[in-house]
Image (cartoon, rainbow, N blue to C red; front, side):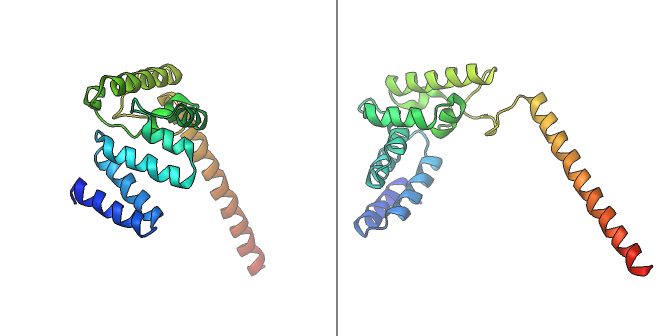
Length: 168
């Protein structure tokens, strides 16, 4: 469905009081059209209806006319730079931002996230929520696998013990 058609449906949803549906459609549009500022602005408007300044600040973050209060609320909610980078839902190069202001903001967030993660990050290859390094991530997975194996062996031992007791 085209961007303009979906935005028209959002208008209909809002007029009918279906705010959650409008929010869902707009989130889909931001995902499908990450470089278009119109769905982001509209999503910020919807979050203002909910009284959620942090989310309104999230979706207005790339706009020069953003509210300082909403931007501060967004920064407080997403204080970790990597999570802030992920929250902006940007994909592709910063040069596609459409304005020098948005390009600078995206670069600033990416640089802070890279410093926090200890390695260079880009918008298309964000790490998982835990964003551990490759070595830390594999160690965590190994521990989880060992824990699952231990639980499986304990369950199997109890089951075999029960079978033996049943036939004794």
